[in-house]
Image (cartoon, rainbow, N blue to C red; front, side, top):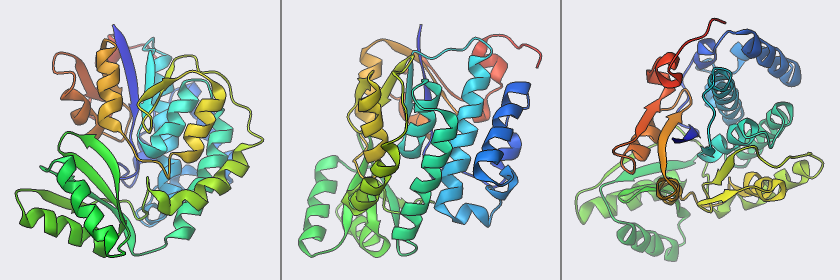
Length: 306
């Protein structure tokens, strides 16, 4: 049985999520490490007020994903592949053994700050459902021709897409698409325009911080959601992490690629569940479950005492 761990992106967060972490000895060591590196207690990251800051959201997702994935690994649930959406690529790289946890904390701290400072207000992301890619791209092209900053950021399913850019431009794009047929659109809890050229300068600054970071070849298949390919070289993963904030996400193609390789088990790390629904459409006969809504023992097949 080939299995994958998936790691959610921004938008999956909720207040108090770090109070729901595993509490075995390994997790307690990770918590202490994170608090030492960041110079603050974890509860300072996930309050309702704190989660209005992109830096705190991304760090909370990183910490939650790594600790829960390591909890499963410690109980014999070892993935053949790891696949993360946006910020989820960082815990994926940690769990694959390519990026050290302390380096990931420092890099995500910087990543979140760069993104927040670049677009403190007026920008974000918007999800579209029930429309084809050709229609979305045609409307975006018209908006761009008018000089409006809106981009196709995520290709999550055959009729599920995410826009990035100015909130007003995204909302107008969704309204124009809706006027031509059935389509639903909603703003996501993501206050920055990820996965488009608007963040290219910030990606270049992040590259400078990556220059001195030592990375290792992964112990399992690291899937680039930007390229829909399995990466097995440290430098390739480095470049994927550096550029992923500014590169389009091909989530559907990445999941389909794994399904074609014979994957039959996908487990999403807390606090996410959306990726599980997207994966389930490509693995209707497989096991697709979100740990946030499933008892860990049901996933590993047995429970061991902490």
